[in-house]
Structure formats: C-alpha cells, structure tokens
Image (cartoon, rainbow, N blue to C red; front, side, top):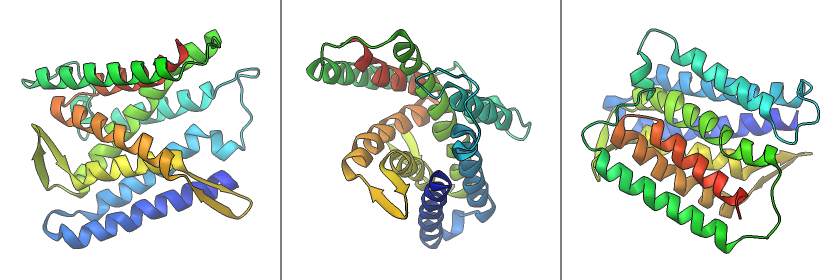
Length: 238
C-alpha cells in the first residue's frame, strides 16, 4: 500500500505540473495526452513493482528486481507496438539522424564522467555477477524505453511547443519526464510519512536531462540506453 500511495503522490505532482504548463502553453496543449501520460505512469509503476509489491517475486533468490523490470519492459513494448505512431516515433530505431556527431561527443563525456566517479568512489569490494549483469542491462532498457520513449512521446504530444537547445528540440513535456525521473528516485512514502531527498533528485534528474538531450538530438533511444547502462554499470567494476 505504501508504494501505491507513493505512486499516487508522484503522479499527482506530474498532473499538477502538467496543468500549470497548460496555463502557459494554452495554444499547443492537448489534455488527452496529459491524461495518457498519467495513466502510463501508473501502469508502468504497477508493472515495475509487481502490483505495488503485492505479487510475490517468481524469481526467488534473486537480489534484484528482474521480474519487475522485465514486466515493465514488456509492458512498454506492448504500448510501442500499437500502430498509431510506429516504432520510430517512440525512438526504437538505430538511425541516429544527421546530427549524431554532437551526440557521440555527449555520450563519450557522460561515459568518462561516470567512469571517473566510479573510480573515485571505489570501495574495493567486488560486486556479484548478478549485480554486474543487472546494472549493465536492466536500468537502461527499462527506464529509457519508458521515460525517454512512451512517456516522452505522450508528454511531447500534450505540449507540442519546443525550443532548440544545442541542436535538440526540447519542450515542456520533455522537461516533465526528467522531473518525474528524479521524483521516482527521490520520493518515498512509508507509514504515513512522505520523504523527499533533494540530493537524490539532483543526481538523477540532472543526468536525465542529458539523456533527454541525446534522445531528442538523435531521435533514437540507442545512445540514452547505452549511456544509462554505462552510468549504472561503471560502479560495479571498481
């Protein structure tokens, strides 16, 4: 129940920010797509947490939430398979577009940054093979397909006005995906107490803006997925 309430709070914040944006971007706002984004987030969180932790983990003995991540990935792919937009609109393409050079530079910078952070924070304790396998695959696949894939498309359709930011078309909807990404990591609820960790929000929300830039610059989820997994996986190697 705590996880369900946390998700409702998180989704409520997204709804409030969306309605605030609707007042600013009246001419380009489409409310049905904001509702779709809210429904997508509720469904995604339900899959990720195995029914808000009510469904037992079928992979007994696992240290990580493989089953929830896999369920969320399959659910996201099911939405992407709907014929209304096509795979490329969701970012499911290897085509990096004509401006991929700057994106490669950004990707390399992120990889170096997180590798450096991993080395500086090394504890000398080797991670298990399961941890290494999980961190190099699941976070990027699951979270990028949702936050920079289905959720981004829904919120970009809700707020169609965009500005060019260093060669990438970024809109209010895109910014909301990064806010929600930070919230889902920083917001917690337990026994009637809501907790928000500003530092966690910053260290997840800010990198998600860079992943958003990669996605919008290239039109593809490929580099965001790779960058995300490097960011998580680098800490398992040192």
